[in-house]
Length: 478
Image 1 (tube, one colour):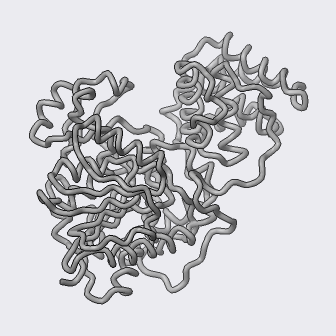
Image 2: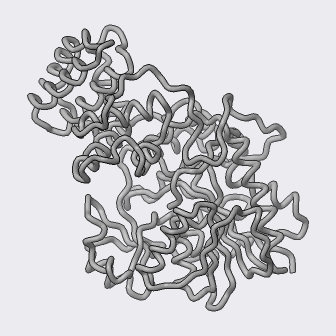
Image 3: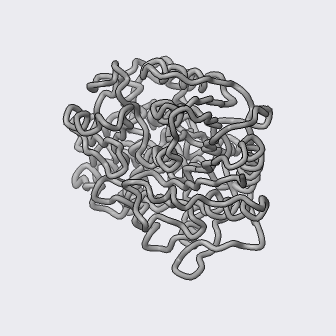
């Protein structure tokens, strides 16, 4: 799975045509606002009025509040906030993990949590106080001891000079919640924010988006890609995993990845089942010269190398390329790695190129519930223009007859179906390889009109869902 995009996004999806499928538009309106290029998160508005600790937090609950304020008020992503230089960097690993889990799950269940709090709050409190209430409510619904949860929340608010008068209200509200804690899984799931829900509903329909929201609320299991597909059945037994139709392995529940059988030996790597589909559609052959653009963290590079291809993995970030190198080392596979901007790379003659382009990452919300809140959809137009430039540049590097895999972890048709239709118009002789959608495990229902594959979180509901993804295999004229 590709991490949240380096840029945020802003063009609305195509309206639905006959059969509910996206259709082209003449105009290309963007969402209101400004994006930022080259960073590792979405556009950031000015910092909100939250009271953050002056020192790095050591208590997981206080640290979770820092994260929640950072996402909901300052519009950072959790990835921004939990990095090596973030506010949690000096915490003990166990405390840091608990803080991240508290913040992540509170964000995942924000809608149900607010529905429990609203009847008990006459006037909306300041954001920092509201977020204390939200985290505490999540813990109470989880079954944590009410005495500790309530006292901690009251203590946090009491330490806020501008808001400490709210401590009595916090105590009263949380005692009411504690008296009858709800099962969050039985409440309606958190709706997507309007900036995203409206265009997605226009593209896929109300029922589909409601099902996606339910999938987001369930979260995501752990998916693994086996290095050797022939070992998948045996690995599934060793790992107590489910073998999915596309060949990925799925593990439910919380596990320590590095302690699982086969980790040290490099017999598999972590990769969402949907993110593993593009390489399976490409069907690389032994000895083919293949370029993986925007390669980090390297799951697709590993797939290509495992198939026997001669792979070059390119990414603009040296730190992220190092992650690719580490994954190659652990799995005992080889690939050439290059740190460079896509547009500065001009080596030609590739049999195939895989372009997992920067995108809105709206397909990964079940893994990253902070994304809809950290983003406001303000720069999708900029992202779509970047994707088009990348497609055009990649085609110049292919040999005649070569294949280009274009994919994004986005639910927005303008970053998928419409992008491919536009590319076909710009490049006479370019075609979609429709045979790529017939690989084992791929449902005919997922095929989009232009010949690509549309994956959504509500697919495979009985198996635990999948990330949202779009993929098409394009072939340059010979």
